[in-house]
Length: 242
Image (cartoon, rainbow, N blue to C red; front, side, top):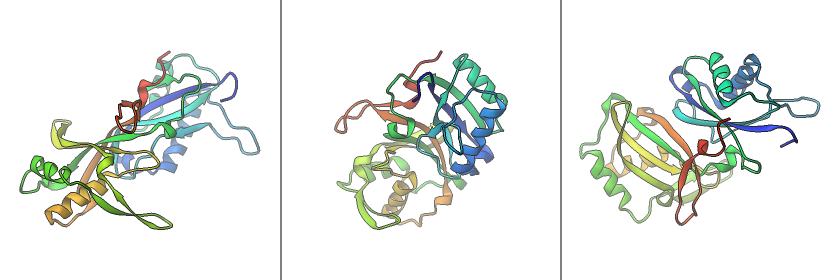
């Protein structure tokens, strides 16, 4: 970060029709928000200057979220509340800035900090397996391994999902029964919720259709513990409100 610049982590939510907007369009959307809100955001140097911002674990199209994050560099700042209020005055329906925190010197950027993500999973048409989900989850997680084949652009690799599933249980969200799933969301071991649910469906011998799923990201987490004993904290617990 250049001398005199202030690094700020912004937390926002994404709901409604905005869930169908892809990551590149979300970047362009926030570029316009910063300009219209007259926030003193820093720009890169060179032939084509651009606003300095980075996002943590971009959200898949069609998913909602209560906990998205972006880091920006500002040249000046009045207060965290001022940033939140100015940005929310420019927000479209379905988007809301929740907090703005000034990061300490040397803090890793949002993308590099991501270790895990939590998700609420509901089903269209109130789909519920006949056995009930608690028993399903117990049987699923009692397996020694949960092997899947992950297809990349260059190859196919076999991976074990189980070490990267940190929590899986019946829960509720917005007064509606659902599943809660916390998984590895790091760049080295990223697990998508649909990958886990597809394996559950296989175990039940039920055809899988990802369009049955209504997924809301609960929050995005960093690991302040170790790989053997992880301790997860939301990304907005780093930094301070000014």
